[in-house]
Length: 296
Image (cartoon, rainbow, N blue to C red):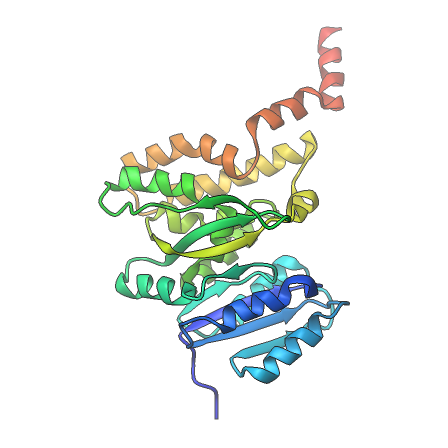
């Protein structure tokens, strides 16, 4: 007999996460909202990750552990847990982050109360390695503002950690697959994945619960494009994707124009600093060579 379909599916992709995994799993298991499944996909870890997962799975039938036969890649592992989900709602949970005990309850109630919304955004607390809170981002209640003001404010206040919000599963599956197909980079892929929810005014802020996002700096070191030769193609794909999402959104023409005008500011905050791009471009050896050729 198949297991009952949970209301919420949670996907936790993990690779060598033993240092923080215990806290992350307990944070989910101790939620006040209990009708969920937690799909944990171990991407070929070589530390104690598998043992920690097995112990928790033996204690809690809501946990569904999966051990990949080999490292399938980070983005593919994110997609795996999403495609394995069965609930009406879905969220990712990182193996080194944690949540308030009322996290699922508050986010679920916000989406259940408004069928038009597809994403419930918590307060995001960025935690740096020493344990202090480097940044606390709460999106205020914007429901009374006109949409032409509301959407740019959502764009401004969103964070990379907002990818760990609660979504309607069908909507986030469509958005994730589109971003994965059209934007072949890891850096800022989280921002573009949630962009459709923001520009379509499908997101609701839930300030009374918090998501604690551990910032180790590893993602920036590993995935951020650095050279001018990398930055320009990256920027083109980022801007192209964002423009298409704005133009295909349900906003009216004036609202789309406002969002397009805001796009350079959004890009500077979420993807690449224009100052860095200019500095890298001016200093690029191949550009200096071309400049010398022009002056001959």
